[in-house]
Image (cartoon, rainbow, N blue to C red):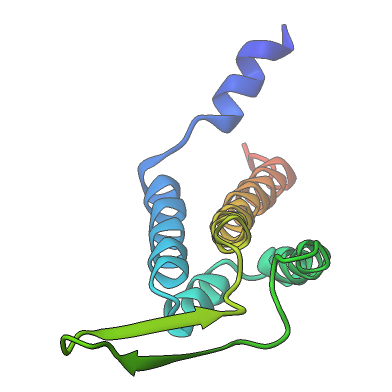
Length: 137
């Protein structure tokens, strides 16, 4: 009956759940606000697994950027004063909305996945340590 045993191994505990949620919230705040420090802090907290997931993020980011119109290589714009005193502005070359949303969601998911993998690694090491320690009686 491996199903119940698997369920007990994957059952979240409060400290590990708070750790994963904390990393996910930091990553989400960073990507939503286009701020580097929460993303870097989340990636640092998710070490060592983030050493794999962050390069994977940039590989997928680069592949998505190759889609025409996703992330133009130059941008510009301007503004002018209209007849009745209103300012008219325009811009071109901004990244596509689907591109920015997709990469933001992907970044949050990959950093969160790194935190989940870290929890699994710590639990596996703890099980190995418990299995290696024999009862002296």
